[in-house]
Picture (tube, rainbow, N blue to C red):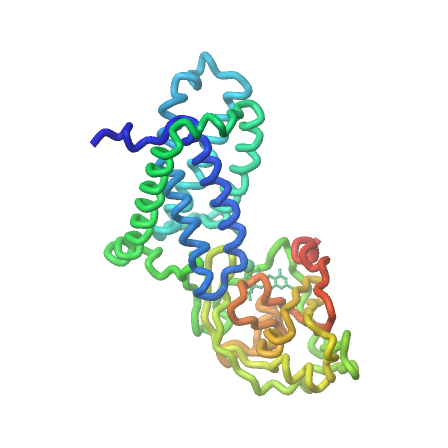
Length: 351
Ligand SMILES: Nc1nc2c(c(=O)[nH]1)N[C@H]1C(S)=C(S)[C@@H](COP(=O)(O)O)O[C@H]1N2
Ligand SMILES: [Mo]
C-alpha cells in the first residue's frame, strides 16, 4: 500500500491539524463538565482527535523537514519548532496517561503536565498561523479525495481508541482502571484517605466547629442558621468524587439533604439556583432541582470529614466534577439567577 495515496494534500493536512487542535481544545475543556456516562463521547472525541494529530503531525514534519535545518533557523521557524515540540509533548503525555503512566512533579503530576502542554498548543498555533497562513480555497482542489482520506483517518482513530481498553487490560497497566472521564481510582471506601485537592491554593485554617454556622438564605421565606450539632444529618449518598486533575474516589457520604434545608427555610418559587459558599469565598451553584438531591456531608465512610476534605461541611454533588463539590461550606443561598462571579471565585478564592 502506498502511504502517499492515503495522505491528504498539503493544505488539507494543515487544515486537518488546525481542526484536530481545535477539537482537542474544545473537548479537553469540556471534560471539566463530564460527570455522567452520557457525556463519555466528549473524551472519545478528544482521543480520536489525538490519534488524528499523531498521524498528521509526521506528514507535516516530513514536508517541512528541510526548512528547520539549524543553519536556516529563523525566529519564526524557532516558533514552529517550539509548537511542534509542545504538541508532541501533549500527545506523548496524553497517550502515556492512557496506558497508566505517572510522573511526580511535586504537587503536580503527569495529567497536569498534559493539560499545561495541551493548553499551550492553541496560542502557539495561532501565532504560527500569523506567519504561515494559506487560504482554505486551496484545499478544495482535492476536496473529494481529501474528504475520503479524512473519513478513513477518523475511522482508524476510533478503532485504535476502542483497542486501548483491551490492550490496557491485557498488559494490566495502571491505565486499566480509568473511568470514562480519564480519571484513575484512588482510596475508594477508605474514609478520609483519598487525595486532598484544592485548586489555586485555597487552603484556609481549620474551621472552628464551635464558631462555625451554616446560613440558609437568599430567596427564602425565613433565613435559617444552624450550629453543627443542630444539622439534621440523617441522609446518606454513595457518590464518586472525580477531580479534573485525573483521579476519582467512591465513598459513602453522610450529612444533610439540601432539599430538607430548603424546605425548612421555605425556598421561594422564584428561586432557580442554589449557591454553595465556602468560608474561603469559593462558591458554585446548582439548578435548584438538582441541588435538592445533593447532600452537604459531615462524614465520609463513617469517619468525620478531615479538615482537608472540607470539615465541617462539604457539598456532595453526584454526577458533577470534583471542583463543584465546595468544601468548608458556610452558606447556602437560593437565587433567581446564577452569579457569574463564581467563575472567577473558583480561580482566585485562595489568593
Ligand atoms: N472551597 C473549596 N472547595 C473545593 C476546592 C477548593 O479549592 N476550595 N477544590 C475543589 C476540587 S478541584 C476538588 S477535586 C474537590 C477535592 O476534594 P478533596 O480535597 O476532598 O479531595 O474539592 C473541590 N472543592
Ligand atoms: Mo479538582
